[in-house]
Image (cartoon, rainbow over all chains, first blue to last red; front, side, top):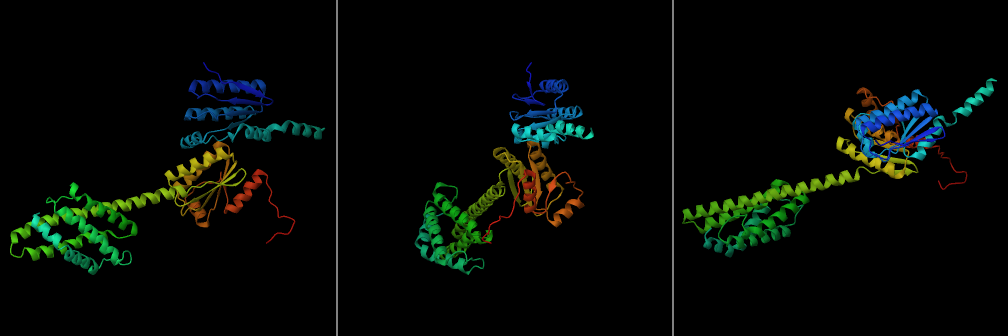
Length: 132
Length: 286
């Protein structure tokens, strides 16, 4: 069975989906990704779907699930590079992926993730210093 | 039709043409503002020439090869008249008035032979009826062509996506938004977002006459799709009446950035991108 690689980049996890997702693969990805988040204590997950041209409601739900699960484990999810046709299909299906952040490409997605959480540990440290 | 009748008509073509043009001139539906008398005489002359040649062939059938030139002239004439803005009545009058001229001639010729007069009249009548059907058909066809062309033009010019700044797209929507149009607008916008890598899209609806729940639905869909792509959407140009209808219909636009004018939307876009617009220190020409 195919496996979608999950790359660790500092505090973030990077997933690039290069093949069309079928249901089993999507479920496996969800599973692997959440395990990886818990193992690495990642603060952000970036999913690049620029190569995905076909999407269905199941896939939309999986994306939503990944976002919600990561959120519980204190990691933000950003989906980047969605194709126009995919976006239109998801909207027509009534899936607006609330809770999922989106960005145009990987670069902008990284920037967004950094803005969301990247500088937080430092701030916490400062806060800690202040208290002392 | 008898060959002697055809020959007789051919011989008296000049009289026939005069009578016909006279009939057209005296008719109340004549549009002398759209067509000059000389042109009218010229058109009548051309058609009559072709018709008299075809009459000589004996069989009176508009669909036959012999009548092809007649049909061609008629079609061309009706299409031009449709474009010039003639009404159906005015266009059909052109052929109908020929009938009267023909009848007068035949009556004159067969005064003493009612049987032949009757037969020739019926045949000619049938022929002219078919000719007016051809006229009407092509007239409507011409009108439809005009409508189709206009529809194409409207849909082409009505959805431009403008790049107002680096990273900011604007899309002024003019006219009613229906499902088909929303689809085109959405596809255009999303495509442009991908191509230009813009983060903000401004949807200006000042040119949309009314916003009902369906149009609002379409707008919300467009905004959601833009968000899924990773860009932000601002709706601008919301007039007072539109705001009132939206609230009265109970449509929830609270999750969407809305602004009253394109200028304030642009201002918001600038602040979202961290761009600042300041007045220059040096003297300007205004």
